[in-house]
Length: 216
Ligand code: SAH
Image (tube, rainbow, N blue to C red; front, side):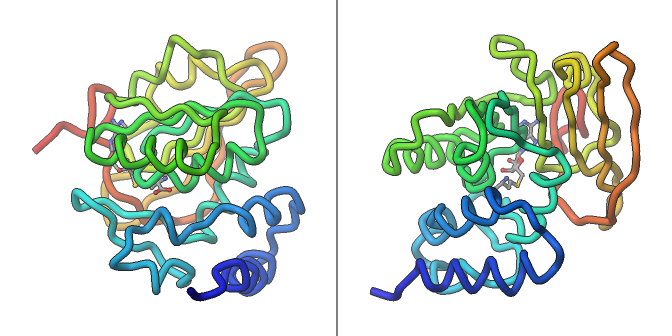
């Protein structure tokens, strides 16, 4: 078998650290989580490529650098309770599970949610909880969250997600309808006031749901 630990170390050095991600805990988590197990067997040879890859059901696993950039932008910390909308393969949720206290990740498509949950069980990542459903309403049962990552692009930041942000919380999400969207960060300060800033241009699959795009 190929040495995937070596492949991951090179992925982190060349694609992530070399592009300016400095958070050592994040780099360590990405060296640790076996990305090849998340991409599906037929594409595992490309698991450490510098690109997004197709997974089941017409969806994608994000490019490693984008996963790192979003997690860094959300400043995911050790004691945090984290929500991800758009679990997909479960890869980003798994990485955040290594960094934070608890992760809840919601996936709309049952097929993907089941695969992702199976991966967490297989890896023993017991603090990562995969839920199936429309995540545009957030996950009220486990709210509030210190960090929220939305891994699909919506018409705007869903109001329920802003409401489920704890004081001091950070939400990172691509917003826009075209091929290129804006990565946006919403922060709630200790007094509860909400601020919003634009980060980078990104390219994500659509967020489909009650507070997202309508299903076609
Ligand atoms: N973070 C993922 C990438 C996921 S791609 C990874 O690491 O693999 C985006 C995912 O968002 C897709 O799987 C898509 O089905 C899901 N999605 C789209 N709309 C959604 C919604 N309303 N609620 C939950 N998941 C949604």
